[in-house]
Image (cartoon, rainbow, N blue to C red; front, top):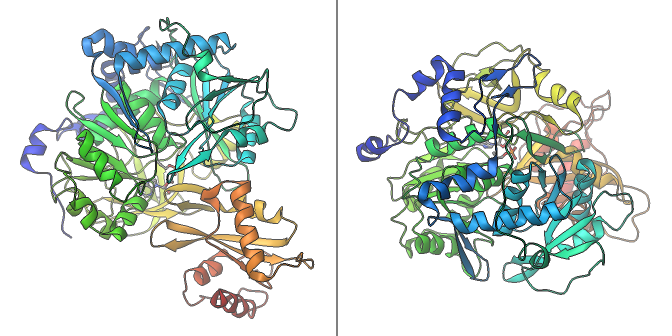
Length: 639
Ligand code: PRX
């Protein structure tokens, strides 16, 4: 197989140099302790590195104290970098703002003072439902400054999804905006907040609203306050408080195999250590000269670790962009790269495949010569997209850094370090220095090369999730019960003859649509809650652009409300979008007379996946009624 070594110039100047793997893996705890000491400011130095005696709960740097926002901001200003740009914000309508580290510190200080005035104290939960605008990052850092726990809910999620997350975390303050823009049109957020909070019984005392798109919104006196009335006049001086390294930093909800999303809890010292270390190593960040752009929204873990925290803790300069890639034209991203001289771009394979479809003449119109590292995340990147990314966007020279990790891992776990590793299209290749991953069989035994198995992490790592909010038992069950003493990631994987790791997709009922995690069960629950539906089964089917697409097979009840099949399908597609969010809207809803079940009544999703992907249906002898599949295939063809 052709591999792509870094150029000699890149390798010579790279921050992570050969030898780092051996050094880190000889004594991972010593390695992480050194990273923690050198990359972070501690108000109280830690003396213990890891306490895993209460496994699977880990304590990293457990007797140390620090403040995440101080590490992201004040420290750089004190070191004389106050005038370095921290964030270039590009709004969808074309407005832009630049924040230096000094500016950002002032804004975060104001927000911290304002939140304090609103009664927020250490340990309180603050729900965040914002577009990708600077106020989102300011909010997160202001919470960190106060030791409050932010819970960011992706702006694409519905009112119901917002409410269940607000309730689960018992948030006191909710920060939102009137809305933002999407494809040149206003896209609203505040109405979803109003709907979410319309029923009694929630814990939110104040809703703080950023004015972004200027559209008219409903206002609840006594509950709603404008950001510009509360934050802008607050003092821009704020004295931070150091917190224990294990103080919770945030909760972020992610889909699991049941209908109920899991509130993944991350803490401070270990999370920041692994975040900033991997940020610098994976992307070879030289903070004084690089301009980094991660296209992820703050509603996802990538937007937490590699937008809100690591780049700022590293003192780097980054771009954030509010809008979609095709507004006002399909060259918008490349125009942004050119405008800011972006050197490191981090995005998802689904975006790359979309650009491939649009054609290479579009990026060719822009100057992309500043780019030197290209990262991907969210799903395995197919070799064709990998090569296109490298050749068309990266001029055939940029290393492609395929980063495997999860909401639960908090930071990169498997990455080809760009100055060291000869990259292979489609493989994330090597565990990060100091991280111990393996591919094992169903009994937990390591597998020989080329044998597909399950991905596990053998040793605790600094950025690991500490628990599921309010449900520690579920945390233990989900990740730590399958194999003794090892974390089970839920992904299939194999090693090749060189020992490089290839990710093979989820092995559980979790789908990956455009790099976003969705639960089949959650969508099925939403469907069966609709009066039309008697039974539903959902599968992720391979899709050329989004990786996987949601395909639902539905049995409707007697009363179809007068809707014909096409209208009923459409109604159910919209219903899922309303219940969960537009990202969960099924690509197809197929109305079928029966679902394939085993004799014990278990739905055989594997067969449905075959149909959804247009394959001949495999082995059906275990089915209670083998003719069911013919009827389903016929329904699929009619669509
Ligand atoms: O299946 C893997 C896939 O995304 C899952 C984690 O999703 P989430 O927690 O939403 O985090 C996404 C961003 C880190 C994983 O279990 N995944 C993520 N990155 C890759 C990947 N699969 C293959 N290759 C990757 N680089």
